[in-house]
Length: 266
Image (cartoon, rainbow, N blue to C red; front, side, top):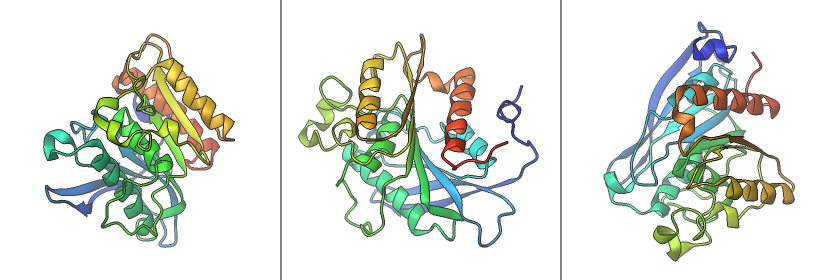
């Protein structure tokens, strides 16, 4: 059975796929791959989501979230897959990755009308270190590119997180690399005014453990927010990239986005 049939999508529903440069850096231009539902009126403004690939802030995986972006655009969302600088390609440290992620959200919001985006409904998603970037754009002040227009908010209004790095303490992930700017860089330590969130983790993930995931959920809930945590039994880090688990997590993510008024019902 195809992905579209599993998600109740019309395989003939058209979409437009384009690419734009959202930022020029000393090493290269950074792009957004954009999935836009076709046949939108000039006045149409749709909810959006921007995805950030994983890779430990080290490597790039530009195609990782293309299936999710394609599927959600068929549910009426404008979807973006963002490139950002990483250590192997650009020789940068994690805080530069976060600066790029914030620039991407700001670009989408600043160009919302042209991109048919509802600027009040821009979600962010990602896996592993990309999940960290999505959560950190929401919860970690600072780490801005000095060239950005800081009057434009980089804060997403919902989060879709796939085994995300939300704890950068010594008990979490990446502390040795970011300790000079811990705890400011760690979403776990900075939850305030939480946005609706869905969170996927494997019960056997040694990097983002079930216990840490539940701690994040609890802190969101204590702050008055919604955090739907889905623990996949027996699964390890990156499990959502396998086809069966990609389909199941996407199905759950779609239901979540429908529930908050971001994705269309089938």
